[in-house]
Image (cartoon, rainbow, N blue to C red; front, side, top):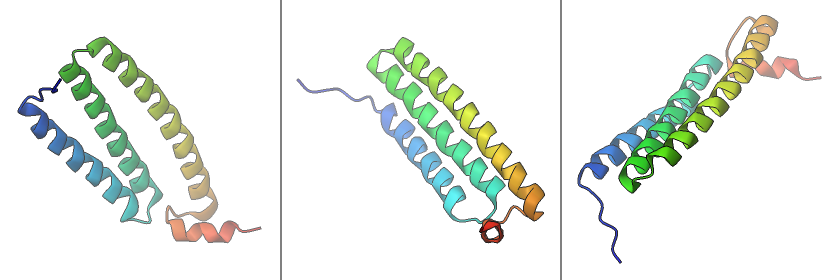
Length: 106
C-alpha cells in the first residue's frame, strides 16, 4: 500500500524547513536573549504550521487542531516564563547579552 503525497506537500515542506532553519539561525547566531526568544517563537510557529499541514494531508484536521491548540498553550507558558527570566536578568545586568550572565556566578 503506497501513500500518495500531493504535489503541494513539497511546497509546504520547503516552507516548513525554511521557517525551522530561520528560527534555529535566529537562536544560534546572536547573544541577545530577546532575539533568542523571538527565534524560539519562529521555531514553534514552524512546528504549528507543520502540524496543520500534516493534519490536512492526512484528513485528520480535528486531531491536528487539538494538537495545535496544545502546542500554542505550551508555547505561551514557555514564552512568559522565559520573558520573566530575561526581564530579571536585564534588571540585574542592564544588558540582554548572554555573555554578561557570567557575572551572576556565586
